Image (cartoon, helix red, strand yellow):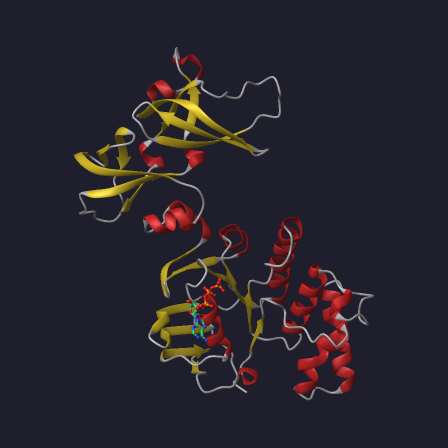
Length: 375
Ligand code: ATP
């Protein structure tokens, strides 16, 4: 097998210009990426963007047409899947239906010629790790979806791979179970000090679990960043829309005022926005504001609100209300013609008025709440 012991500072995994073509279709189109040891990395993207294909190349089930994959500095292109210190957990779990939980978990260990007594010890360890005690003799069809997911995880972890690849591991679980399993996976990864690469099309899942997220679009990496940076500073309009909810306004510069841009928008009139960090040459672009950055207050005397000093103030009426428990999302139809979404934290006090349908309101936000994005 390939022995991999990354020295300090060296990435565990280096992906260099990797591409894969099926017929004339480039499913993975020149991906370069470093994964650090101990990192929880998420590959996020819409269906068909090439996530699984990239993962399969890392695992060795697919050979890249171009590029190199280095594990701890060594090219692993020629290594067979079972020779790599990498394991993959498949989307459908791929459990052996005729084998018990115990034998499913033991399968890879036996194939690697581990001594019988050691196999038993390791399987018991894994069963405890994923909390399957008492279910060792069951067959997969006698387990719930969540229990099957744990068996698959235990089997993938049993050989203690340096790198674990997880392809949509939680897709088959219902919302509550998925959320609790997300936390368990994170704890497990931290406790074992292992490196995880997870594939998901669920942006909340990626944000919850990952140290860094690589967003894929049409076979390419569109942005690689920590969850917060991805959310607060998306590199493009497409990423801003893919990751969370966002208000977007087409805009063009009217004038520059110090570090502020005064911009004209067809939908929201004139806005003042912070100048983007990078030099910015485009005349036409988008102004993006997350719904939770948009404040609301009643129209009329501005005694309650603080909106009287806000630089961006948009008059409108409440057109839609979506109560979500901790927050309520209001869609405000602006007098200027567009709409803006505001996500407002709810008070626990029922006597504190929320806004009602057709109520006249002011939606307001600061220049720093706005992100300027290329169109
Ligand atoms: P999903 O979230 O739906 O699983 P994905 O991002 O994982 O999507 P891939 O499974 O990597 O996407 O597939 C990327 C593209 O390559 C798709 O358009 C798919 O149809 C195509 N593709 C994948 N495997 C093959 C194959 N063996 N032969 C031909 N085309 C393939």
